[in-house]
Amino acid sequence: MNPARGSSPPASSWTRCQRSAAPAQVSPEVLVRRYKQGELHAVSLLHNLASIFQFRLELKETVTPGYVQGLYFAFCVVIDDVAYKTGIGNTKKDARRQAAQFALQELLPRLEAPGVASHLPVQDQASTSRPAQAQTFTACHERKPLANLQVPQAVRDQLTKLLDLHPEFSDCTASTAAFIMETAAGCEVIAVGSGNVNARQSPSADGRLLHDSHAVVTARRSLMRFLYRHLLMFFSEEAVLSGKSVFQQNGGGGGSLLSLKRDVTLHLYINQLPKGAVHPLLDLKPLSFSAWEATQELGLHLAVEGKVFPVSSITADQSNSSLVSMCAMDKLAQWQVLGYQGALLSHFIEPVYVYNIFTADPNCSDTRGLEFSVSRRLDGITSKLPLHYCMIRPRIIPVPSAPASGPPGSRHPTYCINWVQGDLSLEVVDGLQGRTIDKSPFRSSSALASRLCKAAMLHRFKLVAGGCGRDHLLAGGCGRDHLLAGGCGRDHLLAAGTYRKLKKMATPYQEAKSILRAHLLAQGFGSWLAKASVWDNFSM
Image: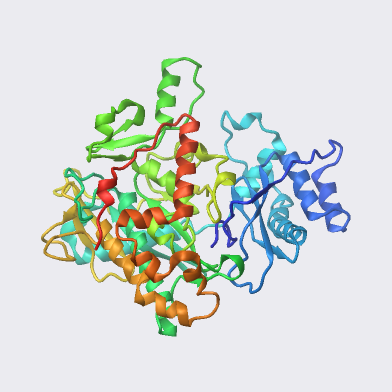
């Protein structure tokens, strides 16, 4: 559980901080000095700084961190959708004060750093109307140390290692995405996916056809395999194996779900912008054709046979087609709210978020369009979401490309690869067919169903929900029985029947998804494509 810098992810019960109007004659330096002298409360200082620097400040009630045992109140400070370390206390007042102190420990050194103004970004049209102090604060607030060079190098090394073993598939990585796990030990690639197409066929009734093979989608489904693997490790009876899992048990009120360990942070690498990304917004004349085009571009998009169209331009008959799906960019925005784990894993773990998106696309020197696509459309949604869910605004970081792209005129333009840390070999899928190719280094069965398909995910879910996890939960301490008490027990889940019903049973996830789609519709971005329920009505 670490929405930002190791903090606990915000919950749904909010106390919105009303901005206290600091007297115009009182400078930030004076306020900070009064705070350090014990004359000003930490929460009051944050209120005043919010008024001066014009940032969005909220105190959000959340769950106690996993390392805390006992019953305490917990709050975290959220500034412009970035959550800081969780504060705890015997009373809500104490928890708010400690959360404010934790936030100030990080903020004040940046505000007091010399030469802050020299680090200001190039101002766009929208930023020029903000006060200079607010712009200075934003520059300090967003300037955080990152392994900008470690990430592309780690991706480059992993792709080279995989393709050296199978050079015949080196032209399958023109569009590639990868998830990187950063810990105190450094950065390592944990999931890789490539591709740029959708399947031509209708989804199979048994969940064994891979419908969407765009790079970000393939990499995300690979990440889900990684999470399932580490859940099985966590529930293992071997202490050594369990200790190597990326998950931890939460204490206090969050004991019913596992979370990522405190030192684990996830990043996403993409070498091409996902389909559906908007271009940087320009100063357009109202009611002009260009302004109308820009408005259309900001909305939701559908992927149809490799091309992207606004949802408003697709008829009802076309939207019901099996060949239509939401574009990769809109899915990326959705995952920054719902988490990358999906509905089934939400029975066991808290939402898993990405905090930095590294883009190696040479055409993405200006990241404002990507930033808007991923997060700006969802501003203000966090306070509406249920416990554990929030909108994480990732930093968009241009980096050098990992030179693994196939040459022009690739022999296998529809082939997609996937790999997860721990795999002995990569899998090659024909994205148009939605199935593994005959010559794939890894093949799960003679039916050529991909290890990323829905049926494979359901199989992994049942391994976790079944005896592999239940006996360990019943025997273990540290609040593990909360998983069962909370309705996530073996019998309850295994009796669900179909894949679709299991997804529907993830109630908080489904609630967050409904809020997300209602928010997009209310903001004028269009209606999210509703999938036909028959696609998910299968069981094993």
